[in-house]
Length: 314
Ligand code: FAD
Image 1 (tube, rainbow, N blue to C red):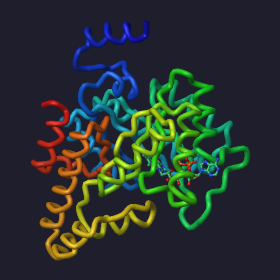
Image 2 (image 1 turned 90 degrees about the vertical axis):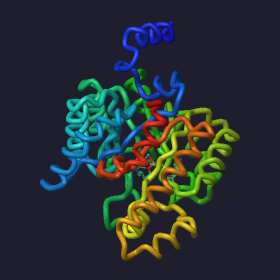
Image 3 (image 1 turned 180 degrees about the horizontal axis):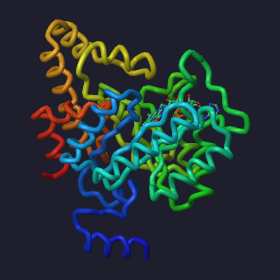
């Protein structure tokens, strides 16, 4: 019956699909979804760049956009504000992120109730990283230790919510090994997560192997690949301070050889992303989630824009 209702809705709103959650879109899509991650800007200048970029990116018409969340309850406030702003710009499916860092379950109840009350129907549920300078994650008093606990809590509290969770093709840095990490991912899906978005990777084979292992472990949820269109060596080095990923030798060598030519370096990185996207799409990936780091300009690199438009069926 819900399926019939959905079909009726889509026939009335053929290209808008405004009432659909990410998982509903994933389930009916005849092509991979294209999505973009934003983060709440911290300074005035960053705000201006964000406003300009977010406005321009509407012409890419992503299937959904997500908004990251920093540590603590106040950061969740800016995630919600930016999510509302994006909706105001015309992005119809916006997914705020929510983390367990520094917040009790009572505060999480209040925060997520507010997200739902504001009309958002998707949440990316995460444990979050320890605050800068701290090595280990410490749950807040009466808070959650793992994302699976938050996901279970959200699923009970808001059964209709679409919940996303994070997956790590190259293993989460704290996990003992890949098998253990996938077991914990299964716990998140069993707790109620609808789909998985991966950490960035630069070698597609790690994604293919990861998906295979997920399926073997009984994880049936869609696994959306997260991609960073690289623009410089410095960017890679910065990203590697907070997430683990392997940089293919050939990419590294080419970027190093172009170190004194930022335009060439950007072209090398973006062509790498285009090749990754093309292969992922050909292999049936359910979506392409772009970590553009609020840098809309990247998506407008003509070849990348053309590639994304092809994925979008335009
Ligand atoms: P978890 O799934 O809880 O896993 C954390 C670690 O604990 C893993 O090593 C896991 O194997 C282990 N583990 C899980 N369950 C158990 C258990 N029962 N027993 C023992 N070990 C266990 N960070 C932010 O701060 N804000 C964001 O907005 C944000 N967005 C992200 C979006 C995506 C798509 C991704 C991939 C990451 C994002 N992150 C974000 C980073 C993420 O918060 C960190 O990687 C964090 O360290 C782990 O979060 P998690 O939700 O994967 O945690």
